[in-house]
Length: 421
Image (cartoon, rainbow, N blue to C red; front, side, top):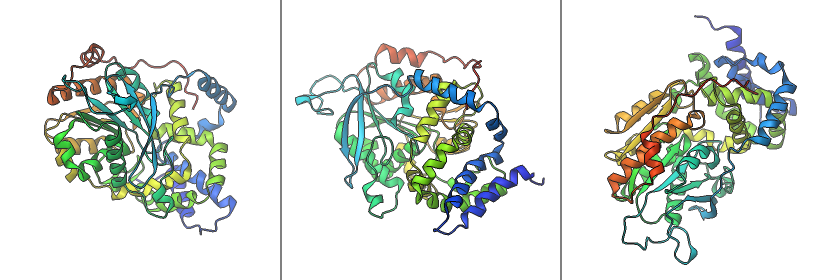
């Protein structure tokens, strides 16, 4: 079948932009920025929506920003130094923390079994607040750790990257180890990773398989993959996907060198970005508009040079062998069936290498399944905690978690409120 002009044009714009020299003009950078965003049109994004009711959408966003509580939950803040000295922002939440001399993460002083410590690792271009619903559901009776990966959220910009060293997923695995050493040096662990956070968990397994033998009692891999990133077509036609994958690293690297101009362009083109974000974040049309807006805010908060810092590392991520360290552990592998960034086929491939893992494919959900279908994700995580607590002989879980694990989550009802994006 011959591609239509609507399918060809956005990808062609990106390809043309990739040939720009490093001394690109102001107009050239703006064109590249819009070209990258408009590539979503090749995946079926209804760009014409941008011309309808713009003032109404902006008013709706302002109202949602004022009313929505998403991302408002906070824990006890502290910073942890990564191996290269980068300061990582961490929050401790939940109950059951041992704090001798007022220091979090100290030795467990009781003779009773130590409770699980559940560590949440967020995805690319997000921060720890993306786990808002899971934090709210599990914070009573369980020790929770949330952290912002380097260069994301409230963590410091990667010192090694600023010194000229390339970013890498293994570095994120080392950061996770530093966080565990600082705040949870003893007791059973459950590691929960979404997208790039799941990759960090796999990198940790590759670097420190002994940790998974001795202390890890459960792992959740949500909307992530163990390798073969170059096979992901992003919902584009085959030829368009191949071209986009070829030119995107160069385009994003170029944009990363023009931070102030690109950020201004992103603000001007917020309507385009909103449609682009929606397409690659959610699979259904019934998502709460406040949640959609919250996702926009998380993604918009990530500077373009941080986007450029990490995008190249995904093609080098190959951790299928590292999954061997997870074999035999209680494991949850969960993905949305309409995830365009880490398709469900990759979750199926990981589950095949993890006998006994629970594979959950969430019908019609996208990449941000933890925000789109929080009730189901909370339920499956609670079930994992029950399996992990039994596996490790950990302290009994509170009644709220047991109830969450036993309740079958309701399917979401269609939202009658128009999506402001």
